[in-house]
Each structure stands twice: as structure tokens, then as C-alpha cells.
Length: 167
Image (cartoon, rainbow, N blue to C red; front, side, top):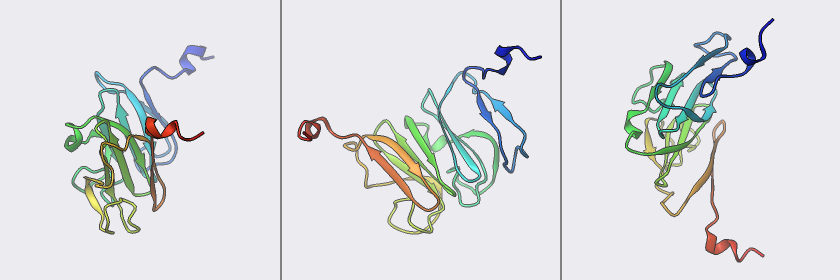
């Protein structure tokens, strides 16, 4: 019989399970050297991990460039998005074939499939690198990102000056 502590997840580990192109329905886990995961998101066949050092790691299918790594090659191990290293990534949202990312500086980036304009870039061209969505400025403090099949959404924090006028 297994001891109870053996059943508990180890601190800082990312556990994966379910059907994927890479794991073949075998549970797995991984850690980051000198860093800890703080935010996860899974899309149709790709995943994103944001770490405590504000780095973004992507892995999985990449047919539409949804990993934002500059190609359409599938990646089986979490890979740091070097283009976003100068930024402090705080949130990521994976849709069916696209990914959104927000940074502490107030930027929101998008990459991947865009057949319905879900990247928010004003067109329907897919991208294989992260592009800044110009709509958002440092005034928009992003509280939450969400990505669906062919849609995206961002929830902003209500500025303090406005909150006093709500009641």
C-alpha cells in the first residue's frame, strides 16, 4: 500500500494526464530548474506554463504557430519563449489553436490560428510569433485572459476612481 505522502503532488511539479500527441495517455510530471510554475493553461493540443520568474514555456502541437516560437514544429518538452524574455509574463490562455499572453507592463500578445480574428490584430492571418495587441495599453490592467475555439477575451481591473461611483 502506498503511503499518503506518495499520493500528494510534490510542490512545484506540473502534472500532466489525458490524451495528447506526446504522452499517449500516460500521466507525467516535470519541474523547472531554479523556477516554479504559477499559472497553467491548456488548449486543444498545446499548453502554456508561466513561472514565478515570469517566463513563458510552451509545448504541444503547433500547426498554426500557437506556440509562438517562430515555426510550426511540434514541441514535446516545455520550451521558453525567448522573444518574451524581456517582458514579465503573468498570464497565458490557450485556445483551440491560438494563445494569448499578458505581461506586468500591460501588454497583451497573441499568436497562432486567426481565421475568425481571435488574435485581436485586426486581420485573419495566422502568426507563429507573439504579436502585441495594440488595443491594450498600460492603462488596461489585465485580471484574466480566456481563449476559446475561435474567440478570445480579456477581463480588466476597474480603475479605483471609477469604483467609488458604482454605488
